[in-house]
Amino acid sequence: MIQPTAFAPHLHAVQAAIIDLDGTMVDTLGDFDVALNQTLEDLGRPTVTRVDIERMVGKGSAHLIRSALLHGGLSGDEAVGVQADAWTRYQAHYLAINGQHSAVYPGVIEGLTALRARGLPLACLTNKPLSFARPLLQAKGLSGFFSHVFGGDSFERNKPDPLPLLKTCEALGTAPAQTLMVGDSQNDGMAARAAGCPVVLVTYGYNHGDPIDQAPHDRLIDSLAELQLL
Image 1 (cartoon, one colour):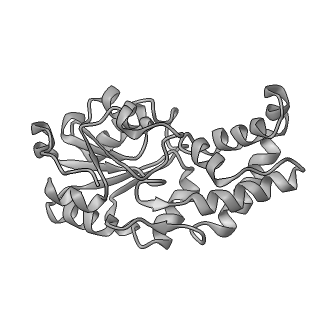
Image 2: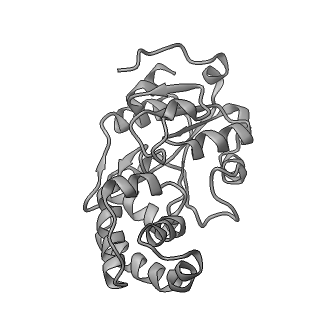
C-alpha cells in the first residue's frame, strides 16, 4: 500500500476532472480476452494470454488487434492485410460481450461521487472506441457521472497525444491547468503533461508491463476513493 502524500498545490485548484476507462474505472481484461481470442480463432491465428493482452491494451483497438497479429507471427505487411477483416470480427465479438467479463474496481463509485459532490464536471476520455465505451459505462452504472464521454475515435489522434485532453477541456469549459486527468498508464501521464493538465495515476491498471511510477504523474493512488482527499 502506497502511503498517501499531499497533493501538489495546483491539484487543490482543479475545476473539472477527466477520467480514463479501461484499467482506471473498469477491469476490462476479461472482455478483451474473450473478444480478441475469438477474433484470432476466426482468422486461424494463434491466441494470446491475458498477460500478453495486458501489455497490448491502452492505445486503442486497432493497436490491440495489430499487436496480437504480430505476436502470433505475422509480418507487418501480413498484419495490415488482415487488419480490416480482423477489426470487423473483433467489433462484432466485443459488442456481443461488452461488460460481461469486466468489473468496476473498488473505490471507483466513492471517488466519482466525491468529485461530483464538490461540483466538479466530469468527462470520461478513453482510447476505447466510443461505440464500446458508452454501453460499458451504462452497463456498469457509471454513465450518470459524466457530462461528456469521448472515445479513441472521437478526435484525430489518441492519447498519449495531448489533443484529446485539450478538446475535452474545451468541452468541459475549463483550462488544462485546472483540469485533473486520472488514468492508469503512461499514455495518460504523457498526454496530461503535454496538455498542461495535472495528473493522478492508479497503481493497479494496464501500463504495457512497465512500472507505473516511471510514468509522468503528480500522485499515485491505490484507489479512486483516495480522490476524496482532493
